[in-house]
Picture 1 (tube, rainbow, N blue to C red):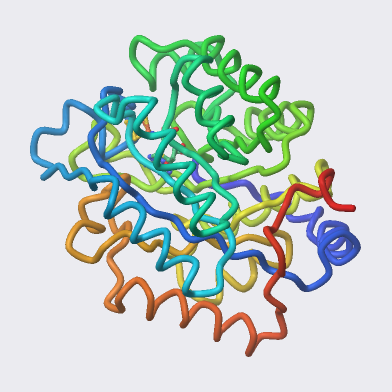
Picture 2: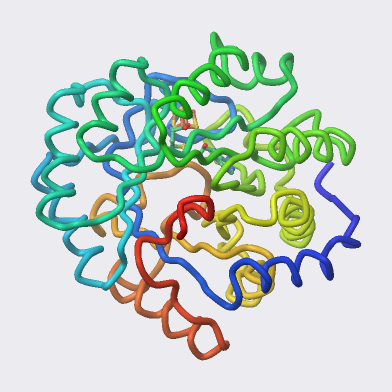
Amino acid sequence: MNKFNDSSFREKAYSLRQQFWQNKVFLRGIVEFSNFCRQDCLYCGLRASNSILPRYRLDYDTIFNCSKAVKELGINTVVLQSGEDTSYDAKSFANLISKIKIELDLAITLSLGERTKEDYELFKKAGADRFLLKIETFCEKNYAFLRPNKTLKERLTCLENLRHLDYDLGSGIIAGLPNDTEKTLNISCEKLAALELDMISISPFTAHKDSPLAKHENFDANSTINIMALMRCLSPKAHIPVTSALSLHGEHIRLEALKYGNVIMPSLTPENFRTNYAIYDGKNDQVLSPVARAKDIEKSLITNGYVLGSGYGQAYRRLK
Ligand code: SAH
Ligand code: SF4
C-alpha cells in the first residue's frame, strides 16, 4: 500500500494553517552527529546490522561548531540527531548542551532515541528544550516486527517521561510501512492527535537499498501531503515539518506540503559525513554545501510569499 487518497481535508487544513501560523515557516538547523546505532529497525539504513555503511561520529567541538553555523545563518533552533549511540555519555553530552545554550543562545531539540529517564532529565536541566521521538507505527504487532527487541509500550513510556520533564514534545509516524492501510494510517493520526503533541512529523517510507525493506514500495508524496493535511485538522496548533524524505520529491512538493506544514529542517551536517547519514536512499545527497542549501531554501520560501518565523519557533502553548 503506497497511497492515502483522501484529500478532502486540504481546504480546511489550509485555513487552519493560516489561522494559527499565517504564512510563517520556522527553520531548524539539524546536525546529524552520529550514524552509529545499537537498534536494528528494519526500515532504516543506520541499523546496527548494516555492515556496509561507513560509520562516523562527530566530536563535541565539531557538534558545537555545526551549531554555531546554524546560529550564523540566523536560525534559532538546532536539532541534534543521531542513531542510538551510547558512546556519548550523558554527562559529557549535557555539558555540550549547556555550552550551546550559554554561548549560542539557541533553542535545542534532541532526537537521539531512547535513553533512561535520568539521562533525559540531565539533558533537560542542561538546557535542552524539545525532544523528537517518533512512534513510527501504533500497531503493537507491527512495531515489534519492525523494531526487533523493542516494544511500543517502551516507546510510549519514553514519550511520557519526556512530557513529565516538560520538554516540548514531538512525535510522528512513517507512512507506508509494511501492513499499513488507509485505515491504520487514519487510526495513527487520531492517536497522534490524542497525544497532544507540540510537533508532529509524517515521513513517507523511503527504502534503503541495504535494509530488509529494500524492495518495499516507497510511499507516495501526494498521499503524504494528504496525511499532513489530516493531521493539521486534528492538531491545528502543532508544528508540522516538511520532512527531508518528502522534500526529496522536489521543490514543488515542498511548497505544496507547506500549505499544511510550517517547519523545515535543513541539514548542517558537515559535507564529508552527511551522505553517510543514510537513513534511506538519497538522504543528504545534495550538490550544494549545507550552508548554501539552507540559504537556497530560505530564498525559495521568501520568493513564494512565506515569512521566516522569528524568535525560537516555540510550541504554540508556550507563546504569550
Ligand atoms: N535514532 C533516532 C533518531 C534518528 S532516526 C530514532 O530512531 O528516534 C530519525 C527518523 O528517521 C526516525 O524517527 C524515522 O521516523 C525516520 N526514518 C528511518 N528510516 C526511514 C525510512 N526508511 N523512511 C522514512 N523515514 C525513516
Ligand atoms: Fe537507529 Fe533510529 Fe535508524 Fe532505528 S530509526 S535504526 S533507532 S537511527
